[in-house]
Length: 412
Image (cartoon, rainbow, N blue to C red):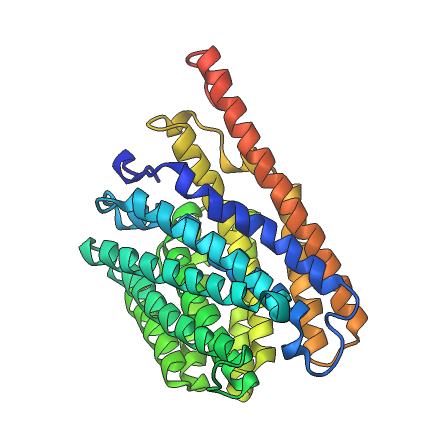
């Protein structure tokens, strides 16, 4: 894949949210490994757990999508970004990052910093709404790739609904108003943002980029569009069976596409994403009996969203590094495998899956020690992920320096 140079944007608007995402995940696992955070029946009211969950959802998943989305929307729509795209990205990044930090502090210390949390949440929501307007504008200008745009369009609408519910829940927790019972409200808020917004973006982009990187055919348009429709209609109507049909169809369609890839072998990125899809298929079956219960959301976070994101990131981040460092000379760029290596990505992926499994089992009744061990493994896996991406960036820069010093040197 060689994107048009006109679709590339300055890395300065991509890096800050992605850097926050890389730092937020180990912080979340560290909090979950702390004594007392996973203890007790009323886990949903504990500040430590609220902070950890939001570090994963807002700090890791959301920030990664925000940062990568600024670059990937022009790339996947194959057109130059709208006028003012970079300026919009910089403003939204500032609002989202600072607002997210304020929200975390307010969740962690609601009595002392509740007002700061409310202001941070307001800034976060405003930044995300402003970003959504820009993304919807860019998607409306695009031509082709209708099913990919359908996933992203529905994801943005689901995200706006989830943000509205989140604001109502925060206000209720602060004593400003009371709208929904805490558990039911939290579950629906999490489902709209995690399954709707995060899931829609990951599957929408993953359905295009994963087959592209693995040299396999894109998912068949009609099953892929039907999966998107059932996925989001089920979430909007609150009917788990409809969402489960969409989830199962999405997982099976993309797995079938990846099974026909031309590049064989154990690619950590592709296999990590595939394991996430298998977990999504299992979640579709489980959700038929559970609905949007917090346990189902926890399973979605730990066993599907994080491994799938890790797998996709292992393909996308080296690609973005190459296209920005070797503009117009991708044939001379090191391969993604040369940048990331093989052992660290595999180990990081395995630790991520074990961590998600351990924490999810605690919510299903397993001993707390299982969750704390899982969280410790997640901390190690997230740290290794930072190391391998830092090493990849360093190798990329060294390759650029070497080629400038020795013109004509080919990649090895």
